[in-house]
Amino acid sequence: MIEKQFIVLVKRNFSCNYHYHSFQGTNGFEELCLLDSGFEEFERVLFSDTSLTFERSIQTKEVNDSLNLTIQRFLIRLSPYFLLSPAHKALEWLVHR
Image (tube, rainbow, N blue to C red; front, side):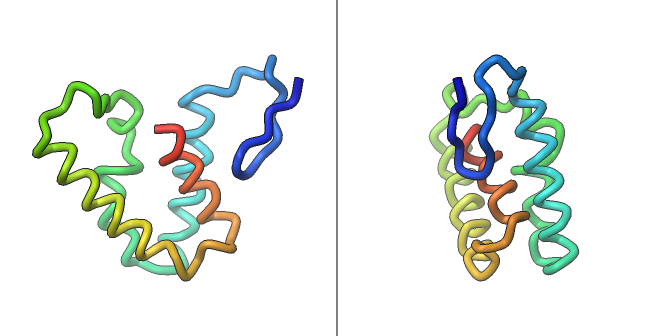
């Protein structure tokens, strides 16, 4: 069975997990940083290794509100690059998180 995702077609039996999406998202994020150093401010919160284990459902309202603002700022910065593959990779990671 083939599953259609935002940026890739993945066979269902392929081990497509958080580590795969993290790798792809980080790769896209690094490419975006080469285009615009302003993306670097989002690395720690959205694209670091700790984001693999971050669970929003157990965070306080304040933490989630802060994260929502960070995501909103990231999406605004991303909008001029949205048609580029690196933007798709980074966005795919955020969707999976």
